[in-house]
Every structure is written in structure tokens, then in C-alpha cells.
Image 1 (cartoon, one colour):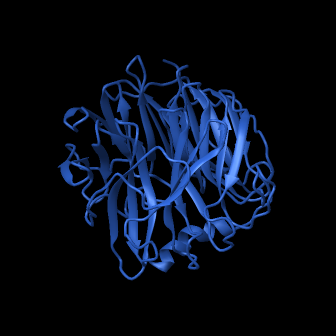
Image 2 (cartoon, rainbow, N blue to C red):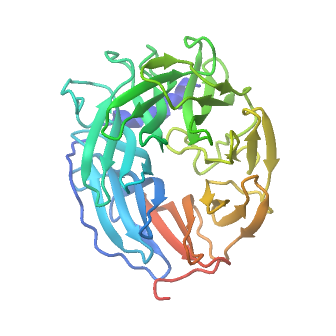
Length: 416
């Protein structure tokens, strides 16, 4: 990866603000054509999940909050655009949430990175790096436990960043991201994963590199990860060489079991691709912030958004077979998720329903459009109403947008 690129990403992490843990109450925010959340502060939306009580939970980072600095935020909203609750988490510096998952109990594990505490929350040991930040909350947003730690403890040069979390079949969690703790070069990182029990105990850690030699000039990040049908984990790895300008993609299957640190342990590893996934013009073009959309397609197959070709790809045969597919209008797909026994793919501003093999069942292109909307998630409820969440630059800040449509693409207002 080019040095300039990495410094551009990571320099934002070094701006120090004064902040503290807080909760902000936001009043109901009605808009007949949807709702814009954010007030005077910038909210960077990272992920949205749907709950069993017909609500949605949104997470990300708030800049310039009530007490200053950057804090993690989590908010719950209902289908009528009402905010159920809003929480901020963090310490005395900058804190980021990049991903989350909801478990069988309805509790939520949030993952990201923190420079806000200066200590490990479970040991009290001091630290000067960004740490992996894990927050486990209940259905009301109450913290049940927090954990901060780093890869290769004792390294004072690196940083630790989590962007993907999965609930495993044994009620534990697998978390993936990257760490710079294995190199003296500030801009170089390795993909890194770890497993947490449901009480926050560290079960295993894994340094995962595509090349057999982890000391090579390649740097790697987790682009996304899903659970395979057998309960193990399929990861998508983004890799760049420090001496070149290309971006590579490799799929690696790793075990969900284990109890120690390992390097390059995998069940299978695909060949490396140089012509899929990445497109610097995507509205989600910062891969460390926004994961590449990927879902399980059954067995060891996955479907991923292809930002290079403006389509999507069915990846099978241990990651070595690609079947490219395209919608009627070739647009960048920003979200893919399960919808009953099918998939819903979406972007600005469209969605499509496919089966698990990527065969297109229906495409919808609403007449209502919103320029510069970066779609982050699209859901369908039991009434076949479609909910779209995204980020929109307004008043020199990023705001959160929530829109509701019928299944044919007609906008549903809050008065209907």
C-alpha cells in the first residue's frame, strides 16, 4: 500500500480531543419524507441491524459531541422514525465503532478501536496505542462489559482496528480487523482476528497474512467475514504491496475453534485476484471504515459486491471460481444482506432481490432519489416495507438518513 494512502487514513486517528462517557437524549425527529438524524454534529454511520421488535440499531462515530472529541454512538429507532434511545461510549480520547452483531439474547457486541482510555479496561495497564475496543450492551443500551486489548502486547508503534464481528454457533464471537503491531513501519499492517467468549474472555488470536512470509512487504486488512455452513469463518482479505500500486483480494477460510495465538492458520486459501472488488470511486471507498458487502450463499460459497465492475460476484469452489453478475443498471452495490431465503442488494437509490445463487428475482429503482446519499443498509419488514439507511453530507456535516418505501419503490411518509 502506498505510504501516502495509509497516512491519509491513519492521520485522522492522531487528532486528540477531550471527551468523556456520556448519554445524549434526542427528541423525536419527524419528517414527512423520512428522517435526518444528527443535529449539529457529524455522525459517521458504520452499520445497521434489525431487531426482533421491529426496530433498527445504528452505530458509528460522533464527532464534536456534547463533551467534544469523537465518541462511539449507538441508537435504536423504530419503523415510524422515532428514536427509542441514543448512547455514547468512550473515554478521554477518540473512540470508534465500526461493526456490530446482535446475539440470540438480543444483546449487541460492538467493535472498533479506542484511544480514549489510555489503559486496558480489564487489567488497568497503561497504553499509548489505539486498542481493539469491544462493548457488549443489552437491549436498552446498557453496558454489560467492555474490553480493550492489542495484538502483540508491548509494541508501542502500532495500532489495532476491528471492523467485523460474527456470533459463532457456540455463543461466542469472532472479531476481525487489522493491527500494525507487527511492524516498525507506521503504515504497514496485518489482518488480525480474535475470539471472545460471551463474558469477554479472550479465547484465541490470529495474525492472518496472504503470503507465507508474514515479514513480506505486503500489508493486509479484513474486508469482511461470514460464517460458513459448517460454523467456520470465511474471510475476505484486502492486500496491497508497499512496492506496487495494485490491490489484491484473497478469500481465506479459518477455523472458529482454537485456544491460542496462531499465524497463517487456515482451512483453505483461494488464489489471489487483482481485478475484483475495489473501486476508489465507490461512496464506500475507504475499506478500513466500510466493509465490502459479503454474505454467505450456502456451503463455502459467498456473494460479494464487485466495485470494479459495478456488479456482484458469486465466489465458490474454495474461493477459486467466480461468476460475475450484473443488475439492469450497472450501479455500485453498497449493501448485501439476507432477506428470508433470498438476498437483498442495494445502493443509491435502488434495491434488488436475488436467490442465494445471485439469480435476479426483482429490481426496484424508486422515482424518489437523493443525490450524494451513501447507502449503508436496506431492510424489508413483514409488511414488505423497505427501509433504507445511509449517510448524507448536509450543512458541512455527515447526517444519518432513514427512508421508507413500499415494495414497488413508492416513498412512504410518516403520515401514512
